[in-house]
Amino acid sequence: MNIAKDHTYDVIIVGGGPVGLTLANLLGIHNIHTLVLEQNTAPPDLPRAVSLDDESLRIWQQCGLIDQILPFVAQGAEGDVVFTYRTQTDKKIFNLIQSGRPYGYARGNVFLHHHTLVELTNGLNRFTEVDYRPGHTVFTIEQFPDRVVVKSKDSAGADSEYSCDYLIACDGGRSTVRAALDIKLKGFSYAESWLIADTFSPSQVTQKLQEGVEVWCDAECPTATIPLPGGYRRWEFLLRKNVQSDEYLDDAIIGEMIARRKPLGDAQVINRLIHAYKASIAQSYSKGRVFLAGDAAHLSPPFAGQGMATGLRDAANLSWKLAHVLRGSAPQKLLQSYEWERRPHQVKMLKLARRMGQMMMPRTFLQATLIKFFFSFAEQVETLKKMMEIRGQNVTPVYRYENMRKGSKVGHYIPQPTIGENGLLDEYLGRDFTLITFDCPAEEILSEEEQSQWEKRGIDYLWLRPEGETFSAYKVFDQWLAGCQRRMLIVRPDRFVFEDRILENGGKPD
Image 1: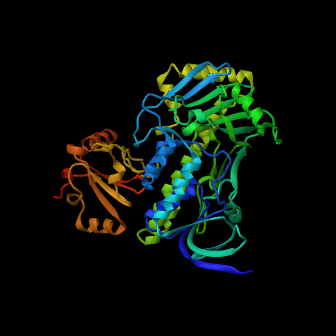
Image 2: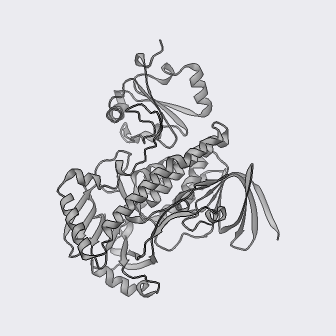
Image 3: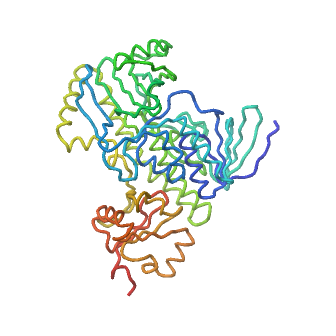
């Protein structure tokens, strides 16, 4: 076998889906020599994720691609209905309203997966240090104490060999890398299958979305639909028997099922899939120099709309840690914190998705009746309604550490208010760490030695003053911190608080 040997990379990413491409863009920003090996040569033509939260958009902002991606996102305006729960007879019994933008974007969003994938791929062209190679299937992985060797076959049948310091598996739920490492998934598969179909309506291309996600509580055929930008729409139908035939993939049958819920109009079925969802998580997120991210590490049913968002958080968490270890500004053991931080949140999201699935999948008429009663009651009780929201504090990670003082924001995701007329906070934060002060500039707080140590690691400075263009941002942090005077924050590259320091003497040296 003739194998073409390529040069060594810092990081090789197996899988060019949203998580792998987001990770590659973030590593490119850190100037990390990266290779992406993607099996497909074109975007997949099967239904893929369509739901986003505000954290996802903020991560793509961090990638420097938010302006390219937003045309394919429907955020919704303040007060828009983003979720409606209906009875089987189409009666509305529960609504959730779009409210607040604590991280700079609407909390609930929908997007066009394939267009976004193209923009994430094109984003790699900005970086001389990042190579993207579609049509490459990885077939061998060998680990050594100081490197990982990867062998792949391209679409023309030619074999190649690459080596890297770290390999990241972003190759989906059927991850070949995870299988090669013999890392098991723990969890279960749902017994029932869902019919997932996407439609396109030419007459709706330029229409503003008038409604959000709709779910029908129906013991015979639970149904969900999600309107998408550009005239597209997602439909999901629970099939009450284990369907393996192509019967339900027929466009005419799909059209009939849709018409029971909404007029079909000029909508055409463009993608369809029968799929049994899984709820599982890998026993370990790493082995040696190989790490798992996204669906390779955890599989979530779509009921909470957090599957892809959770994977994007993986990419944001892991990217800066890889960059600092590879640059020598952090010890290799920093990479161990990837699993310590991410696993508890992923377990929480799996539990949330399962609870939401129980609400969406009544198995008997009695269950359906009880669920409808619960939603009708929740509609009238604001506290209960907020507890059911799939956004904000219900889904945002908090990384817990021992011996934290009461009220500390270490491990918390910082808000992203506007600064000035239009700018968002993150545009003023650095690529690496950022020290945010409120009472005085950083040089009046850090000693020369501490300042020198941080600057070697990579740090920028931001002074949010209670006047001028930073006044509104100061107010947001003052509320978030329950008083920001005599406080200093050091913020990680992924926008979580690394250090929350209470200053003495107003922050000025004695």
